[in-house]
Amino acid sequence: MIALTPELLLRAYAAGIFPMAEDAEDREVFWVDPDQRGVLPLDRFHLPRRLRRALRQELFDIRCDSAFAEVVRGCAEPRPERPKTWINEEIVQLYTALFRLGFAHSVECWHAGALVGGLYGVALGGAFFGESMFSRVSDASKIALAQLVARLRLGGYRLLDTQFVTPHLERFGAIEIPRRQYHRELAAALEVDAYFPGEPLPGEAAAALLQSSTPIS
Image (spheres, rainbow, N blue to C red):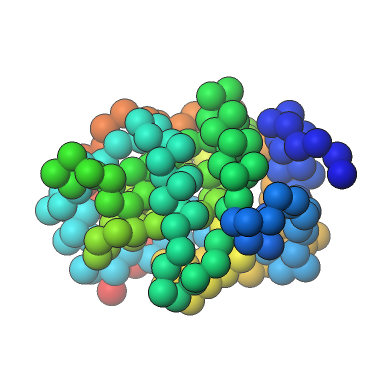
């Protein structure tokens, strides 16, 4: 088996493929390049009214990149609806290494000094590859996703890759596109010089960014 390195991971993402493991105990990973790729169009994010209110109420302290490894491990926690996870220890270490190199980021929800939810992903050019999210309290992962989309729009990103489409992501506008179309959109996004805004973004400002071109219901 070829040894995985951060450099190999970056080349894989630029080529449109990503790694997964069968479960947390499996030490090997395999490469995935789906026929239908999940994406969340940044200009068509669906912001439900309830989520807009939650953003503005600032229920959580939103931080970026302050506890990246903790977020990855939070995403690896088993849950009733998903007792097994694809995130094994090698993936934790590899993505933490990417984070140290500046190619991975986390959006975190904190409450009373505790990490209660968040997400992480990989950033290349104007593409952001969302990897996983978790929530220990109601709405934490939804707020993290909304904050991520607002930041990507602010930073000039063109593509938010969700890998697959789940019913949860579908509620926010995620769609499937054919592999060939995805590779075209990825190639264009990689040419963009985007930046990840890690500074504080008040909930009111995030809501305004998301409302600017998306319907609210």
